[in-house]
Amino acid sequence: MVEINDRPVNDRQHNRLHHHGNDRLHHQSIEDFVGELTAFASPQVFNPWRDYHPDTDISPDAPEIRRVHLKQYLRLRKEAKFLFVAEAAGYQGGHFSGVALTSERMLLGNHTDISPAMILGGHMAGRTSSPASPHLKPAQRASGFAEPTATVVWKEILHNGLSPFEVILWNIFPFHPYNAKKGLLSNRTPTKKELAVGATFLGKLLTVAPGAEDLLVIAIGGHAAETLAKMGVPHRHVPHPSNGGTPGFRRGMRGILQLEGLKSQLRRSFP
Image 1 (cartoon, one colour):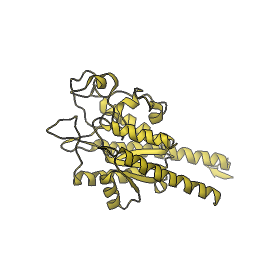
Image 2 (cartoon, rainbow, N blue to C red):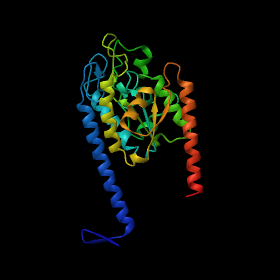
Image 3 (tube, rainbow, N blue to C red):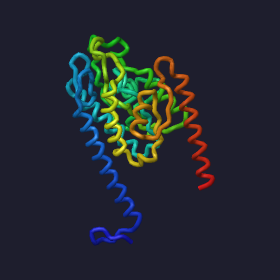
Image 4 (cartoon, rainbow, N blue to C red):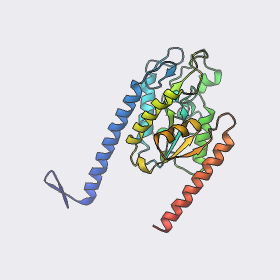
């Protein structure tokens, strides 16, 4: 028996109280983390959780909608086993969804393979791109943005039999760097300074994720791998699926995950 506040509590009740306490801590840690993300501002960078643009966003509430998406996404992954880290948010993905490697079309239930429940559970997502914007193509106005890289990554998660809630998707630079000459709906490679800034946020994410020391970290692309190496974070590396890299990405992911599956079987057989 364990006593709390002078009332006898059995071990099962104590474990439940301890678990609920951890839930509250996890919840507050996510709130604080998203608050720090929201405070970031930099030239030629769109911060999905802070910035609003009247030409492309549905309303001034768009950043808040994206903050809610990210908080819910992270809360559902407190038992995650994998952390996939790519390069940066893109205009077709995290810019409008608020979640790394995830498109708005997935969140809105307009994707053929990925459902909103896989991402946010039972939470209803909100659209943040403006269907009235002249900068959007007809399909984007009708269904929201779709990102090819996000589709490849999510389909590979499902192909390998992983639960979406076992995987945290992230970008080494979590914000959207864009080309000033091409406009907000463009992408560019993060600078070395931006990658260094992103590394600090990844470090903070690792303090938020319970059991972070046990996460298998997979770098998607060279920039993520180089930055993780500089941070001293153990990781595996696969090619980025963009620009013809999809076959290499798939082979790399399947090799890593098959090896991890064999290791798990051995651990169960020889505890």
